[in-house]
Image 1 (tube, rainbow, N blue to C red):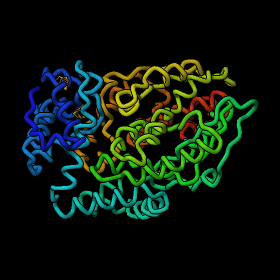
Image 2 (image 1 turned 180 degrees about the horizontal axis):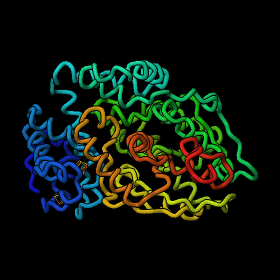
Image 3 (image 1 turned 120 degrees about the horizontal axis):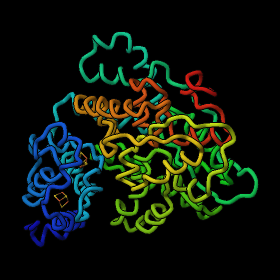
Length: 432
Ligand code: SF4
Ligand code: SF4
């Protein structure tokens, strides 16, 4: 694709990068074939190629974003299916992130939308505030039909009874069982700490059982993913994590920074890119990104222990977009589940997003619901006894309506190798 940025525009690192990305695109349109919003809406501007043209026009002409541009960019899930499909290697993620940041800086949204976005950005990265908000939402659930649109949506998405806080997060070092093979830092993801601390508990049991010393680094907190994808400057959060993990790296050594929420893992793997122009942090950020691993990548490297109990359940594996498209980790979770004795079922249209996508199901509820229904239909056709996924957003999105327990992959692996029955499976499955 030809571009026409001026030399003055190209003095800016982001614009140079956008120019490079745009020139890679040969506008073949293959990406439209796997784009969920194009599949639902059939509008060229709701597919990646159309969005690329909109972004190109906005950046080249230094135009303020119009309502039309914002509408089509907002509808994008950042699922990155288009990146997996693109034969030319177009980095759509970096391009759409630039567009979102420009929109955030220079487009004035309606008042109610501004307040909703502010609320989400303030609450979600802070576990204490998020827990308090969930209790408030739980109180409102019985009268949610009376609430105005978006508030009703938030109340409906909140769990009826948020789980109790886990003592786990007061810990620092969790020693390896037997000889130590690896020393890893685990990112305790902010929203997951509140919504499903059982997943971090299972992760720590599983990793320590397989010879990992696990550290919850002091000072590590939200990775910045949710707010970054809302177009907000999240680099302060990223720097705080980089500092925390660098301290651990220098004090005791680290073999990996482990993430068990794939949306967050994708962002930590991008720290090096996102801070490339920050002289004080560029090298440290690149080092942390090089250490970042999805939990299943680490387990695949360690080799899974033989199952400690009979398994064999039919597991529908839902590949979270951020894991399969963002990190290109697709084989490891399925291979580990198979090794643990589960009968892993592929879900039809597995490339399509379930509609969760960070804050998407709160900001674009109609499209999110349509994708959720389509995903649940595809899952049901595998007749599973349980659904496994590697991202808390997907787990929450699918849990209500799947008719079977929806758990994190590590919960099944933990159970198979000696841990307790995953809480959502208790009483619903043989052996539970
Ligand atoms: S598939 Fe790649 S090269 Fe083709 S239009 Fe889409 S982004 Fe451009
Ligand atoms: S990120 Fe997903 S929704 Fe957005 S353009 Fe690409 S395929 Fe479509």
